[in-house]
Image 1 (cartoon, one colour):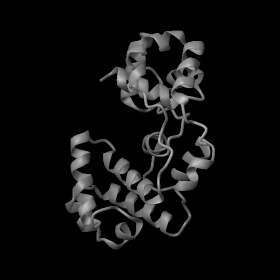
Image 2: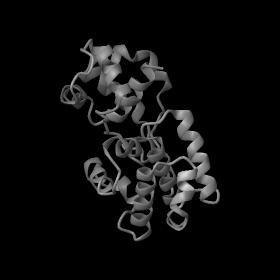
Image 3: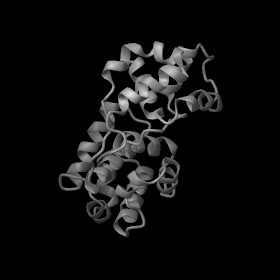
Length: 208
């Protein structure tokens, strides 16, 4: 049985014990948390999810969704390593991807295709090790990797210190000055470990 089944309740009890202020400030969002994070994904689903995250870098949701749909058409219905490697750069550019993002998708596809990167195996190793493996790929930075670990792999103890939405939520909850340093945010988030992903979900929901 996956270790994070029913983690929602365990995570909330942890927050109440180690950070009562955070627990109280996010109480309105507790009911919206998922009972568990994603536990079953195929390699094909993980690859498609990572493509979507790369596309979403520095874009609004609507624009990212539109471009992702175009990329799926370029890839004959669903992004796969084989399709991404086979299709010409110009087709991705016409779909709305920048040259840099296209290069990143090609690099991910090559790594998966030559088996130097096994996306499914990233569920079984420590978060830091999984992040390090992903960031070896050209164009994959901390934010993209953290989003993938949280939302696609269901890793429980991930905190995206560079995410503006999380930063603004924490500044509001803790009455911190605007643009508080990542170091300070990480120090606060450390107490939420090993359930920092759930804390991030609460912070994002608090701003909606």
